[in-house]
Image (cartoon, rainbow, N blue to C red; front, side, top):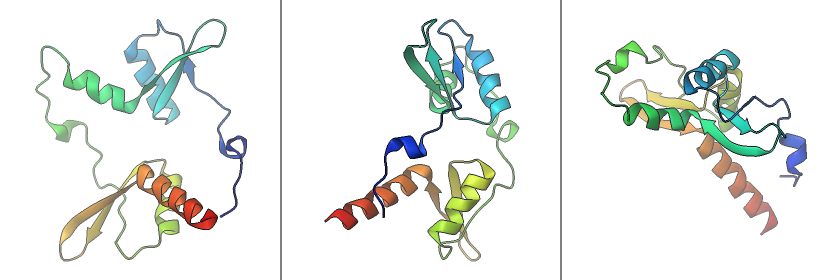
Length: 134
């Protein structure tokens, strides 16, 4: 695998908010834009922080009083899946095309058997890079 600089891969079309943006507005912006994070910048465009979908999980978990809404009210029904025998390239293409970071792995006989995440793909690519330089 060719070693390239971050500049070749990084996104430059950034979604930013100010530190005083309401979390509800940031969440709507993320949904409307189909992204998993917004960067928080001050008036001088200095990075102050990042707000991610994982942060929203923490917000909901720590909410008081607790919301009694079942998962079924918010879950994505009939998610795209893959099989254990699919190639990594096929799976990565499906994730990129669908704009998602989690791909359940199913088997016709056993049902759900695993999940492939963007973290798994990044670890795979990093491992390939380490092997190529060893």
